[in-house]
Structures are given as C-alpha cells and as structure tokens.
Image (cartoon, rainbow, N blue to C red; front, side, top):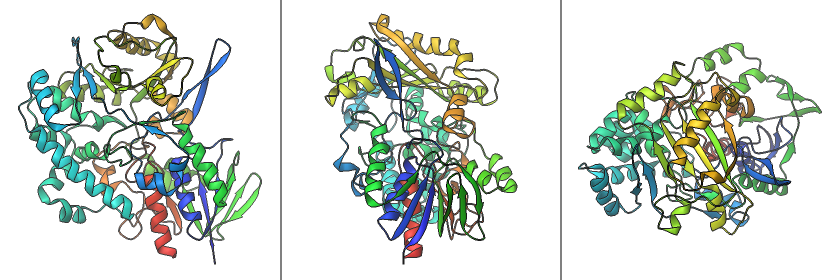
Length: 502
C-alpha cells in the first residue's frame, strides 16, 4: 500500500525529493506558499524599450547538481546546458591583464608560477582535492549520510584531517606559497557566509563547492535561464502524479494524528518533508524550543548580487580570445589572507556596511549566446562579498556604485550599461526567506559542516530527521551537503526514506 508523503517547499530540493518519492511507491503532495514554484531558482523581469527582459532573480548558475539526478529525474530530456571550458580569469588590484586558471594542471602550474610567483605543489592540491570530491560524489549517489570514520577509511587520516576536519588557513598554507594563489583557491570558504579561514572544518568548503558531477566539478549555465531547472522538474513531477498546491498556507500541523491543515482544507501524511529554510518547520510546528535552538546557529550571510544589463555585448579589455567572452571572472580587492579575513569579519560584526572582498562574475548573456539564445540585452551577474545584514539595497547604493566602478576598469564599453538590479543579504532574507540572508541557509563553519550539517536529534540513526520528530524530515539547503541549486539534499533524504519504508 502506498504511503502519503507531504513535501513543503517547491524549491529544487522539494522538487527532487517529490520526484524520487513519487516514483518509489509514495503518493506525494507538494505544498508551496507562493503562487509559483522554484524557491530561489526563479526569473524576474525588467522592461527595456517596452519589452520584457528576463533575468535570474536568485540563483544564476548550476554547479553542485549530480549528473545522475539530472538524468534520473528526466531533466536531461528537457534541458540544454553549457559550461565554459575556457580558463577562468582572475584580476587582482592594479592588474591590466588577468591570470588564467586553466583546467589542465600543467598549464595551471606554469601560469601561477609566472603570474603569482607560485612555488608550491599545485598538482598535489588538485590531486588531493579530487580524491575528496570523488569520495563525496560516491556517498551522494549511494544516498549515504556523511561520517568521519568512513571518510578516514576511504581517504586516509592525513587527507581527512587536512581537508575535512582542518582549517582553510592550514590547508592553503600546506600546498601554496603565493598569497594570491591562496586567496583564489580559498575564496569559497566565505561562499555562504563570513566563515573564518582559521576555524576548524572550513577547509571542507573548498572541495564541497566543486563536488557537482554535472559539469565535472565546474559550474555552468542553463539555456533560457536557471529557472528552467525547477520549471521543467515541476512539469515532470506533475506528469508522474505529484499533486502540487500553490498559494497554500499551512495553518496547523497535528503531529499526533498526522494531519496538515491549510487554507483550502486538510491533508493526511505518513511522511512529512520540509524543503524550506530550517526555521520554517519549527514555526509551523509551533515548536518554540526548537526555534530557539536553531536561531542560536550561525545563520548570518554576507553575499550580495548585482545584475548588470548592457545595450550591447560587453567588450572586455585585453580579450583576444573570443571564447573568453563566456569565461567566469573574478575581481579581488584583497591581496592576502589577512586582508581577506578582515573583510569578511568586519561585515559579520556589522562594523561596516560593505567591505570589498571579491566579485565573482557570471557572464549570463555570453553563455546564452553560446547556446543560441539571443537576447535584447547582455547580462553580467556580479556575485559580491562582503555585506552586512542590516541594510537593504536602497540603503547601499554607494556599494553598488563601487562594484560597478571596479567592473568598469576591465571593460571598454561601460557606457552601454543601462540598468542594474541589486540584492543585499537583507533583501535575500526578505525575498527568499534565507535566514539572515544566508544563501546556503547556514554558514559552512565547524559545527555546521560535513557530518554536523544536520538538524536531527539522532543523526546516527536518522540524519535527515527534523529535531526529535518521528516521520518528519528536513532536506533544505541547510542540510548536508548544502544548497547551490544542487537538489542533492532532497535526493539523499528521499533515498533514505525510501530505504526505510521499502
């Protein structure tokens, strides 16, 4: 007999969990409070010359999704992808030409030695990182919970201590001599929030952010826009029989009788899964103690986003290679790890509203052109660090202007810039319900990383259980491994539920 599974939250993890459960003898009802699906993986519009121009409002690029999820859910049949195989390009202060981050390790070693005076062991770093990534991809596919003992069995004590338990500071110093190399390789430590590079467990964020298998550890684009991932997955799920309730607020959850009361009636459940932020379940369950416990976690985010629209394709300075139009670019304001640490911690402590760290540039328009999707305006997405949490974009126009000023040093046609859209952590909190503006819902710090990235009171037995509640699970971006348009938490959680109730 089929069991009733209710999934709350129609973001990528809720959609992935619904897909696997519906195909494995569960009747799934998906409840979403908004009148649209997608969570933070949605589009927005601006108007230009009386035409609507679509752009990614929240998430922009696809990276941490696993290829088997892409294939097994059915997305492969409906989605066209592209990732830049040209080198990533990195600018430090006063650079007129970028440093190229090649995928080929021999080319990379040569470039880093010539440009950044790097005499460390770049090859060993890549080899060891790939071992950790390989391990992560294996446990993802098996639907296993993260476990330090199993990590040591697979990777050995040295790599586990250095890459999973250790600090980013020690990891980077173990392999590299150049401060610029350390900065580039270590910037993902602050991807979700202002984690300290000196804190144990922060090294793990580096291989984690490269552990997607859909682009072989790299990041890429979706034809039409990233929102096509959630849009198409919703259509697939509906064909499978998933019942989706939009514009539906949950009013009460009766955990004793296993009933959910919502705006339009009620629904019974055997299994309840939350694909939301981690605070929402406690609010809906009216669990004040659980909410207090979760609010004590490190939730602060410091990432902002500027979408820049250009009337003509962006012309990069010193860009002789046409393929480099779609390269990811990075503009650093820091020059060493101490500056990097100071920038991130200043905003965490709310000492400043904006402290220049780095700008990660996603060439959305150029990537769409590569896929034959011509658009009226060119688009650059400027993922930017570091912001405090207490101000909206309207209050930080000076920070947006500074970001555009840094960008303008590297392009020839800044006069073609015709519009910008700016989101601060506070905006992200208000628009996408990210707790304190954190894109991964919690900062990837020591007590919130790898095997500790769980909300279960009994993680050894039931890693994705929500607090002490039997038959209630959490698979949002706050759970292992993290968010970043991966769907991986939703997959692992559903896989463990399917095994339990098979």
